[in-house]
Structure formats: structure tokens, C-alpha cells
Image 1 (cartoon, rainbow, N blue to C red):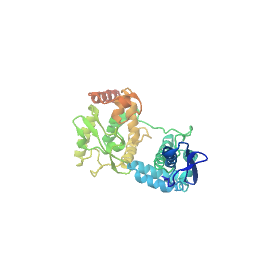
Image 2 (cartoon, rainbow, N blue to C red; image 1 turned 30 degrees about the vertical axis):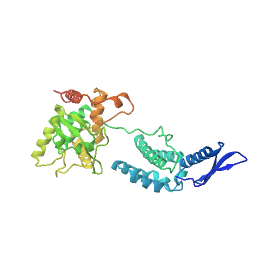
Image 3 (cartoon, helix red, strand yellow; image 1 turned 60 degrees about the vertical axis):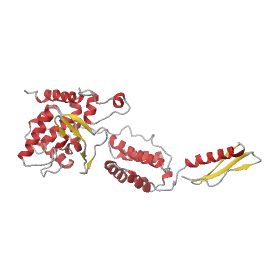
Image 4 (cartoon, rainbow, N blue to C red; image 1 turned 90 degrees about the vertical axis):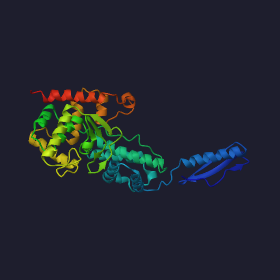
Length: 356
């Protein structure tokens, strides 16, 4: 922040105090018509306030500040996104001075990314990353711009998520056992994120309660849960417990000893990449609808349990709704975990026992 090194002077003819200061090539004069020390102090305060609002060094290249900002990030996912978006989209402004960056420059990045066919969600992630950077730069006095006017093109495609239909669920349950078939079933029954599934340990299960407290991301890194809502405990019903029992027996038959609930064949934790490949081969061999991704299992859970009250469902999958009554004031109620498990049992009864 530029600092004041001069003092106000009393101008007898004008009968006022005046001080001139400069920051980033701009010179300003501030005055006070109050005589005595009070007037001098007022002029100093006006000058100091203006200097405090000025940027530190507007000539710094964006690339330099971007690297400094990335060093402040603590989330591995956030670091990965920041580096990826920079390399593929944002680096076009890398050589520009931070003071010369405009909202139009940032909007151009989003518009250019949209022309490559990126989905609305991907564009929103790029915008969110740039917003976080600009917020940091603004707090650090490198810039004064804001990003609320950056918009996503209206014609940007919305990513289409394919889910398992009821017949696909029946095919899954009736399919021959494979190494990860119990993981696939448990995913549909619980709505857990792929990383949460492969991060489960047997010690996380206490009778009918499952504690989700870690995840393994797509880059095979063990992480804490995605957010506070993701760190949760859910009740397990008849179907979930049955799948876990089948998994214990399958591991025993195959002589796999592991602390992980759904380990690789070596006993180490699985990887999202390997599980995704296994799912593709498994679904093709069983005649299950194609195009369903591991995250599609989670969407399947939400869709299948459409009758479950929203509050129960959100807490079950680790979601929150910001700034609404339920999200802000809704809290866990004794017995609601068991209630959610009962909803799931009834819904899967209607699907899996349809032909009986």
C-alpha cells in the first residue's frame, strides 16, 4: 500500500490546509477548511484513506500473481483445477499487467471456452476459479475490479447425466459376481461419491451406521471429505447390510485381507480409474444401459429415491442448500437416519421384487 511521506500545508490566502500525494502515477490533492490541528489531521486522513484504496503494484504480470495465489490454496482439488484452467484457458492474459485487466478480459476467457463446447458446469468452474483469484488479488491491493458481471453464455450446453433405470438396477442385482460388483450395488444404494466409496474402511462401520470421513480422488490421493456436509454418518438398511455381508464373504473366498471395504485385488485401496474401467466392462457384459458414469450412480440414488423428503436426502448424500430455511436451520433429528434407510428399502423392494 502506498504511504504518505509529506504533510499538509496551511494556505493563508485560501484559508485551508492542503496536501498532495501520489500513487501509481496519479497525483491527488486533499484539503480541509478547518483551522488548526484538527484541519491538518482531517486533510491527512483524506489523503491516507485514498492511498489505502490504491493498488500496490499494478504493473505486476498476472502470471506472477497467479502463481502466488496458487501457493495459498490448501485443497488439492482446487490446486489441480487452478493449474488446469490456467494452462487451457486463462493463460492468455498471463503477460498483461494486473492493473490493466478488465472484466471484459475475463468474460472473453469464458466466451472462448464456451466456443470449444464446454458444458455450463465447466464454464461455471472456470468463472469460479477466476473469481477466487481476483478476490485474493483485490484483498492484496493488486486490483480493484470485481467479477459479478461475468456471465455464462445462455446457449452453453448443460451436461446430461445418464442414470440407471429400474431395469438396469435389476440387471445389476442379478448379474454374476465380479470383483467390484458389490461396490456398484453399494453406490446405487447409498449415493456416495466415487471417491468416498473407495475410501471406505471396515472400521467406518459400526453395526448399522456408516461414517464417511475420507475420500480418494481421481489422482489417487487420500483426502478429507469434500466439505463439512460430506463428513457425515448414515444409517444402513437391509439392502446395504446385505451387500456388505456379501462383500465380506467375497473377500474371504478370494483370500483378500484388507482394511478397505472395496479394495483392489492386491488388497490396497482401489482407484477411481480402475473402478470406472471395470464398470464399463461389467455394464456392457450385463446389458446395462451405456453412458452411465460412476457419478451417474449417485444421480441414480437421488432419482430413484425421489419420494424421500428433501432434508433427509440432502443429509444422506452430503449436500446442503445455502441460504434456505432447511439448509440453514435444518439439523439432524434423532431417528431420521433410520427413516432414510427405510425409504431406501421400500423403494428398492418395489424395483427388485417387481418380477416376483
